[in-house]
Image (tube, rainbow, N blue to C red; front, side, top):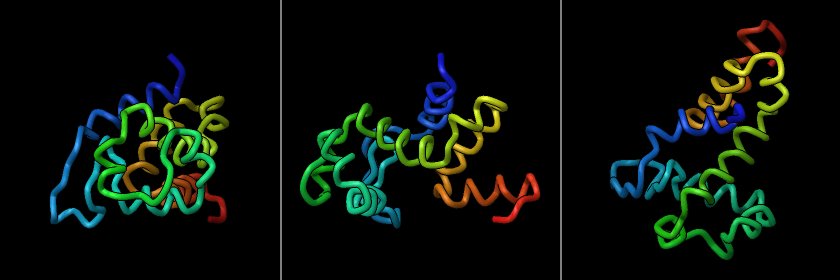
Length: 123
């Protein structure tokens, strides 16, 4: 199993099915993808969204119809590829997994900044 698969499976343990808690500031969520994240993501990456079958404006129905495979591909693109975790995994698979998981839970930029601080380089 490749390192992304391990990282995804670890993070996905806590990202269940549909959740529509009105107290959640991210809004309706499925497989860890909330409507606020997907709306922003779709604006930044419309071609990628089209390639995974997400077209038009993101709505509650978009989230309800989201598949686990779509969520996985979005997470790989945004948090694994977006933080260059594949490159990191070549020298430290565990560090790549932590970077990915931190990105998923706190935002891509936060994971990268924490790693930069940890190794003592300029953020």
